[in-house]
Image (cartoon, rainbow over all chains, first blue to last red; front, side, top):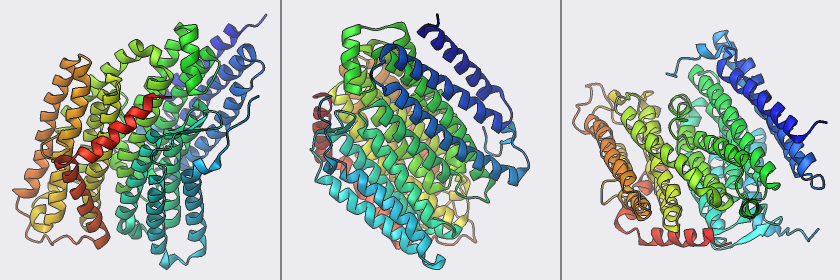
Length: 102
Length: 481
């Protein structure tokens, strides 16, 4: 039997993997993907809470849909900036973005 | 289901903002490229009109969609703060954007949309609404940050902003999802009721930690401030001014709503975190500001320090505290935007942001030097300028709650801040300008805006009564449902 706890633990693990990736990866693309993982962990949380605690109200699922849409917009902007930087410097590694003191 | 409350008149300000943003965007496509200056004027006039309209709603207190969207004096005052900043920044952008020539309409329209996002944040009565407003603001500002396509520094600031902004949003969202799960609602008023009923659970506290960390990112409190100086330096200067003032104010508006209204029962828990953030922010920001050589980085760290002072108002958790935050934010708009407008005017003429190039500015342009001097002294809290009054209220608010040591640290660090502000003043007034230095021309629009800011800085300090009355009355209505 899969309970709410299982989903919450899955989400927590996914969130931690995402956070680690966002902090440790060199490529800007990988960082953006890791952030997606974090957001998807949030979605699992929201949908699981909605399903198990408030089966009648769909607030959590609506919240998840909003998160998915906004995340798509965010990544679109992020990738556009990565392309722009790549044209300037032929690199997409975050540790080479050091023109401004980090 | 009970009847939904949908009185769209309450949303007039937001609807007007969205319309203005779209109209500006479409105008940019219709108007020939060489006449795009009209778009800038149109945006400013539109923003002024919306600001004047918002005054008619000053004391309206109502709910939209059963508490999901709140129109109250608190949110209206914050909306006016955002509008004021947007107006001043749009005036400051005229020359700056003309130099870059391209896509002016997109620039102004994004600025309007960012302001709209902040308004939604300030008015949000629901966590989903709050998140949408936050992202509308962050994504618009992010595009603005890397608006100078050919400038690698601007693009670098943009990628840093989007990565850190998205990461902090994700962290905050995780907190929001836990709060939602533990209270089974996303409406702020109902969250407070649910916690009062069910008590505090460990998961809720975990959610609170994530939530505070996310907000600390948005208001750039130490140790979540690392993004601020880089992005402030790389972004086009008008955008920096907008980021430094409006986005920080929006973060505070949302943070106060969530912490003070939704989670008052967790006061003992979040209070510890906020006190820690305050001490770190006030001490570190002011010390790190001293060795800065770039004026935008200096102002960035001084802005981080100001966020620390504003946090004092949240620590106090009283009407006086909220009122002091409102008053400080209101004055901070004029002081900080004035400082950034001087930086813009100087950059337009010389192309430099380094403090050493400000040598002899008092000779080259007495107006610019005077505005920069007084806005900085005001931020440092020297009487009779505005910063003194607002800091006095903030410190009183925390001392009333027994945090004498906290007020003492803040006063000490305030004195440290005088030091680095005066270094700039010394360069401007005592240094001799280079022989080939020309006087700096300031356009008449910018001159009017600068003088307005200067007048307001003095007005807030010498005769603060009307402004403090406004802030305190708004704070009075904040806690009553």
